[in-house]
Length: 208
Image (cartoon, rainbow, N blue to C red; front, side, top):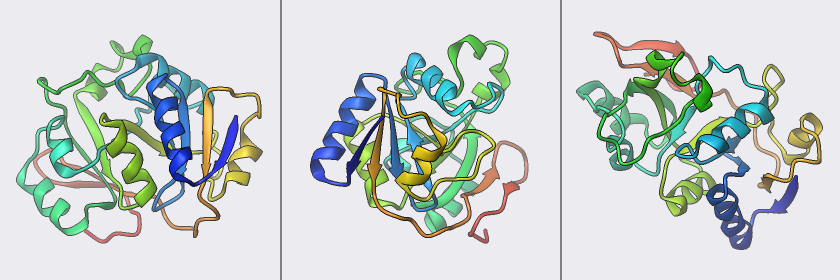
């Protein structure tokens, strides 16, 4: 596990980690997050194994912009209204996945894909307001995972030191971009837009 200060060089190295199937821990507008290439099934499997995340809990996808997200999900009027008001920002919208998306994406490890086919018809999307997060997904050019940088069931991490305290140090495929100590904020608000009416699944620091 490598820890680097936030610099232009470390951002470039983070992109190379993502390109070869590694994992990048980085600051977001909520807590530190873990990013991997969602079009790479091996990378997704590595993420779940590293985080010890249950295989029945798909991760969300991070996009560079609303336009980028629209290439992967079936947008609707409700999504547009919420996006204009709250995005970029700590809001996750669950929407139907497009069948003609530019890339196949894996929200869970591929061995579980068939068993979790219902989850794969929907996807949680995030568009971050944090400059580092925006830089990563924009430079990478494809959707990356967005999930908290902690072992499943453990507290969210708001510093590189807190990440290191939860994960073993011998993880060669993990890079931590140290953006300093983050203020403690609630996680993103999650709204499911796949039914006839919006359903708030988690209340964060937004009031839709």
